[in-house]
Length: 448
Image 1 (cartoon, rainbow, N blue to C red):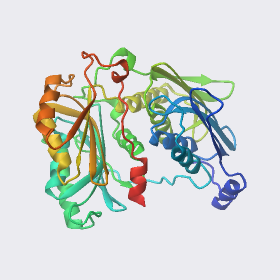
Image 2: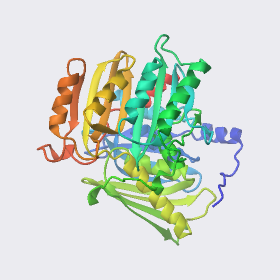
Image 3: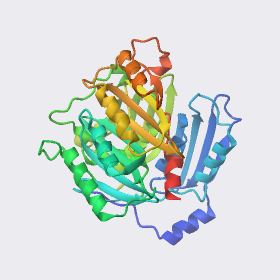
Image 4: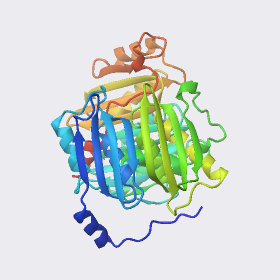
């Protein structure tokens, strides 16, 4: 289906409409006894639902229910949210941030320009250089990438790494060790780019081995990772792919049907509930050029039910079996990319050049394979979160964890956030992992 843009709107007219009818945001703690209601009324515009869900997700809020309606010129939605502990949102700073971010002056500017075929992306963001990589995953690859950066005196101050369908995608924010600023020297950047290409390329010449992308402009890091995987067509799998064998309860059930009365396609998702599930689904539908007109989201215990009434941006429904199947595959991939079954390790240490390289080397030497990772740096403190399995993809033996704790314990605080299913861990600590970090405020600081 051809890609058709939204009808043209005069920017001045659109700005006038927003000034006359500015977004109205309310955070209500009195209407519901067990959650906070976030209500947003606004002039409708492309991508507004994703903007709202992105802001709530960046605050690590859990969306337990939501009602969306944006058919016509007005956007109205209600979100039932809690914090990570299942309690109401009572912190004044968080409430103030929600009201400001979703209010008249909080609109997100999110433009991207892609250079297809460029294998390593390098972009300066504030005082940091952003590097985007995607390629075929293998044990120890993250360790090799971080070793190259350490040898070239690049300090990794933030990073997000995902793996899916034997592919790895990562966005790393680095600066120069000596100046703590973005690296602008074209010679150094060229050397780094070539060395990273060689690592991603490995010993194979298959075009799928190291096809990566380059982004111009600032895009939310989680959305960018989804875009990179989508462009890489990870949802198709492929020869040599070893997909994780998720238990039946982990696999989402997705259907696409026709609502003849209203002329919508209805996408229904039944899935194990987890943090940022709605963001991943809305992000994928948006980047596939579909518009959500109505939606209902609810969670019952550990499971979530989400229903979206959509059309393509040109107003067409999903009228072919091939298109429906593609949407189902892409949503399944988007949901499973963030799934991290295994042990979650949180390591805290004083930041230094080569810290990520050192930690990932130790993980590799202990036979651990990283399935997902996040790195943040606040002041002089670095927090690295790794979701790991053994090199064969099996759960990690706790003896390995104890050995790891002894090896790095003298310099690094190690917290095991999640343990293998055989141990007597609480029910909440098994199954789908919830990240204990978020990037919203961190990247805002980069852009300041």
